[in-house]
Length: 388
Ligand SMILES: [Zn+2]
Image 1: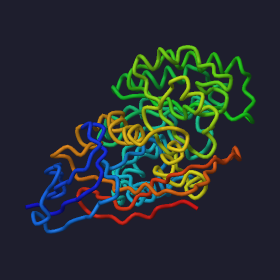
Image 2: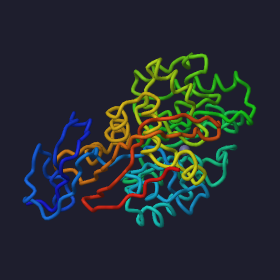
Image 3: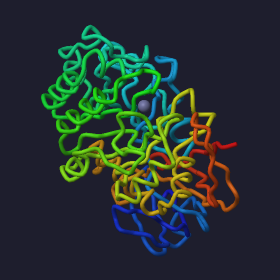
């Protein structure tokens, strides 16, 4: 006897190699069975998932959910369970000086599970650009906060902004990498320098090349399809020297769509050149949650329109981000014994017009991935799909 059965859905679980109709039996918040047919009389409650896609709870590997701590923070549950996402990773909203506010006042109130990458800047994204002098970095305090909060902190975040590249250069990457190695966690690097920052091309290129050579297996490049200076894929189709070697070393590539970091052309070039992301994420902030980004399922729908397939996208939003967070034994799959974090999605057909943020481009798609119901540890949560 189960508490709940999710019945008749099309299961996509890349970690288990399943893309097939299955039923899921759930008891006490955990997945107990994943079988072709579980009799309806074996449970107190049935969720009819016929015609729906059922996946492991989606994971957004790059968002900003330090709501109320930084001005660009968004509600973790708007970004999370209300959008079919059961786990979010905050990418550097806080640093060693304000992480505890995040931990004490935001994380416990969310239904969505939250992990984070701690910003190398002590005050995180309180002010942008955050790193402009060595006084904004405190390696000792950063290590102490990580050691005391390893259950939540899964890595270090460094944004390679124009101010950082011009004023401090690649020594910051060495500092970040030194801390990351000491605490044995990955380093996530933000790519893309705003044109207004006027950093000379040769300075950007030598920074990016050196940065890339410092990254190891498990480190992450985020905003891989950026059109800005300092990206890894050029408009002329040229890849940054060292990129293929970095990919071979096991460096993770993350999309982090955002409002200003995504280019359709660069994505197409990336696809042609075989530069595929490891993880698909939103970079949701207060600036883009109601304008052009909306949610992880909307971001996935955009990539679907640009030529990715559903299995790739579910891989990039379930087991791959779970591995990035070293959480693959706890989430990212529907294997029996896992917590019942499940996304029930509908693939709606129609004519959809997608906006590409600040760049002012639009493009069309024929499908929209709509979150219809989220299960978090077996508890049903109604979704609030967003798109206009
Ligand atoms: Zn970000």
